[in-house]
Length: 122
Image 1 (tube, rainbow, N blue to C red):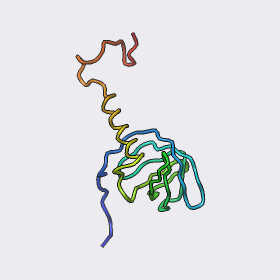
Image 2 (image 1 turned 30 degrees about the horizontal axis):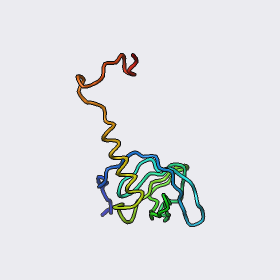
Image 3 (image 1 turned 90 degrees about the vertical axis):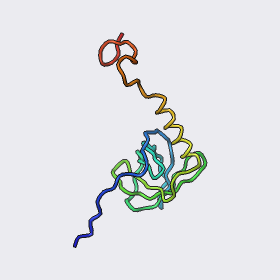
Image 4 (image 1 turned 60 degrees about the horizontal axis):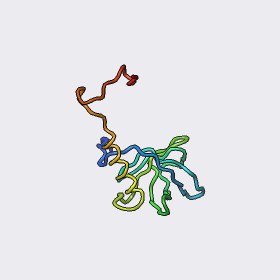
């Protein structure tokens, strides 16, 4: 009998962001940028640490603890052991979600501004 775990859907919606951070690992302190964020984790570009290692994310004078779930040469995915419910990163996530809702273009053709071509040249 195989011990196989089927992939499950993410429980939190990922939101694209661009947040400059510092990541503190066991032996290094590296700058990076959070490219997408949710209450349960983040993708960090520009920093890389070994999978399953623990790290600290420093942002706006606050520390958020994380575990590296996957890692590539110049980016990694981290999971937060405690969901974001408050603090600077949570406020940045809420602000990004609010701005994403405000920037949504109209869906119906009659609500769009008149333009020429796909790029909107006038």
